[in-house]
Each structure stands twice: as structure tokens, then as C-alpha cells.
Image (cartoon, rainbow, N blue to C red; front, side, top):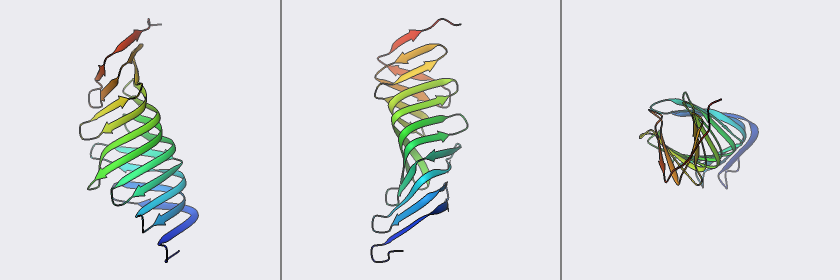
Length: 173
């Protein structure tokens, strides 16, 4: 404990339980002046939303209390009942203990209901049940590859909307 600077650290395993998120990791840095908590390595946990639970793992996690934002860095993996997301960086934004949206950046891959989407950026709007892919989005479904400026995937029904589409089809094997 560094009371003068408002910092608490440990290199030991950490287990934190919250209302909507549980997380474990190795090492902790809590800064009361910045109102942040950082799990330093080997992060894993569970996020509960209105619709589902998502397991996650990452190299590190940083939480900002004032803006209720989690930042997962490193190889980030999130798995839900019907969604699997992999990315380099994920921001999780919440309001009143409910997840509003997840923004994934860098090497984004999402697999859901037989559809695979790849892009450099994706935003998952939880309440609307849609994922918007931008920055070179590509979608693969049933031997069809679709590219466009923006791809919108609706998680409830698995529907796709592609802006300015370019489509390539492969013959079935």
C-alpha cells in the first residue's frame, strides 16, 4: 500500500467478484487518484448481460470507475452461447451495471450461427442485438464471401446487411 499516492499493488493471483462481472488475474494495480484498477496478466472472467453470459480472457484488463469502462488488451477472447469473438483490444462500455456495447479493434474475428466475420473494427450494440463491422469487413457464410464498406450482423436472427457489397461465391464441394 502506498497511501500517500493512493496506489495498491500485488503480484499475487487476484479474484474480484462484482454484480455483473467476475474476473481473475495475476497482479493488480489500483490507483485511487485515477479511479482505475488493472489486472496485470492472465486475465479471465465472466460478464453477465440481460441476454447471456460471456466468458472472456485477455493478457490484461483495465477498469475505469468514473466511466464504467473495461479495456481488455492482448489476445482477447470472448465466448457466449452463440457468439465467439477474438481481437487485439476490446472496450466494454456499461451504464448502471448493464453492458451497452463492446468495441473490438485489431484483427477482429466473430463467429456466430455459422457466419464468420473479419474486420479491423467491430462494435456490438447489446440492446439492439447487432454488430457493425468496419475497416475492411469480410463475411463468410455458406461458401459465400462478402465484402463491403460496412457489414451489419443481427445476432437475433443471423441476418446480414452489407453496404456497397462485393460478393464471391465458391461451388460446393
